[in-house]
Length: 60
Image (cartoon, rainbow, N blue to C red):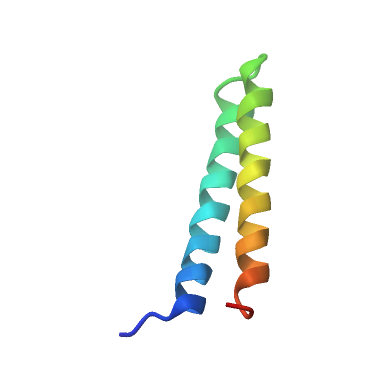
């Protein structure tokens, strides 16, 4: 199974989406006070990075 650049970026995108969802879920369900905003902000940042990786998939 050969992995080229597009496959690596696709896997990185998927992993970052899962981690972003996990961070947002931790912020919602475990920490409902001030720290929830931090977890949610980092989760949204992971979504932004995943979006960039997805945009680079066909260009590299």
